[in-house]
Image (cartoon, rainbow, N blue to C red; front, side):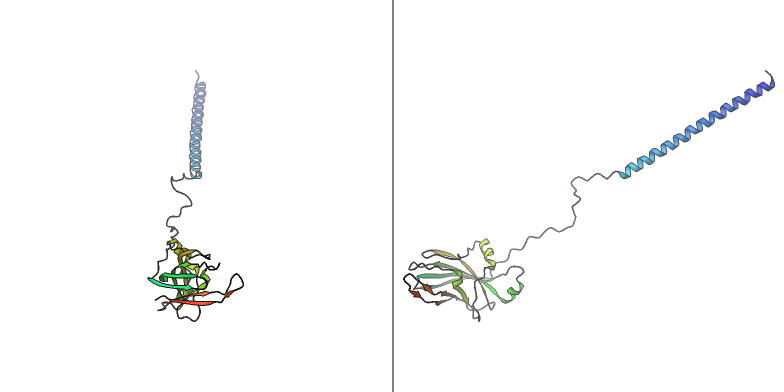
Length: 223
């Protein structure tokens, strides 16, 4: 082979080696770029996926939030006194017997003004409505005497409390010939009055035949 031909063969071989080197480098670069894209895609997928919910935990739970408190049940009376007093209405035949007096019942929450001015007193009575006429007994016929200028009226403000304590309230109307035992609560002043009395006022009553029985007040000291 001539020298010139040998040089052409050597140059062709060198070109093939260079071309092979360029092709291998391109494949490496392409492979690295492909690995980088996969890592970026993996990272994006990881950050966009919401965290799994923890078992037993609600998003609405607020640790440290106090629960609603149960209202305090009012305490009972400050004193209970047994009483033996009675009132008889000879015209209508009613008989009212007082059995107990409970002093100092607490006022419900929110009754701050009343609690500072008045005392709640519960009186247990037995009513026996007469049979001479069809006349009934009702709470509005009763007041408590305490030395106050105005009459101390019945107040139902703690009736529900008494009923819850198994202390029945006397009926709104007791028909003639019937008997009932129960309680009436009075709002009195002054607070802590030393002497109390039950006052029963018989209303003016017109009976069959046109006869009129006049109004009359009866009083029984309660000690």
